[in-house]
Amino acid sequence: MRRRGAAALVALVVLTGACGGGNGDGDDNEGLPDDGTTGGCVTDSNMDVYSAPGVVHTDAPGYAGPLGAGPNPTYTVNPPSGGDHLSQATRPGVYAGLNVVPDGHLVHSLEHGYVILWYRPDVPVREITIVRDVRDKYPRDVLVVERKDMPAPVAATAWKQRLQCQRADADDLSDFVEKARNKAPEKVPH
Image (cartoon, rainbow, N blue to C red; front, side, top):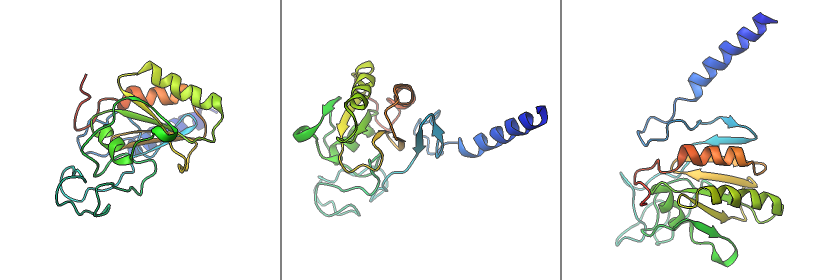
């Protein structure tokens, strides 16, 4: 029994070293798991690519990048966690129904170090309450956004980091916010 336990521990240490090294891009996302799991949620670092070196504002004159020639970018990663975006960021708050803002503004918020907690409108009210309760713990750092076409019922995104959950878990969401808030190219203006 001890040998099996020791072998499992060695395998865990090796696996953690192989998967938890981060993306090496120097964007201060250390401490967030990459392509792993936490509780009932799965993390990854999927994001859309930039059309040019650095970050591009799609509503700047002359923009014609891979996300489209118009000012409103579309994203292949759902929910988005980075890429070209609009020049105006969205402030922390709750955005649902007709109040939801375009993804390009939300991605700019991520660039400023904000965290977005997403939920599908078809999740039970108790799940939405959990998401909003987590936001209430971090009112200066978190946006809550309803998103109808999201693959996971609940998710969280930060710059270059995503957490996708089958259900809202206050501990997983809070842990993600704690580790990801204000860790992006531009810091949250407090």
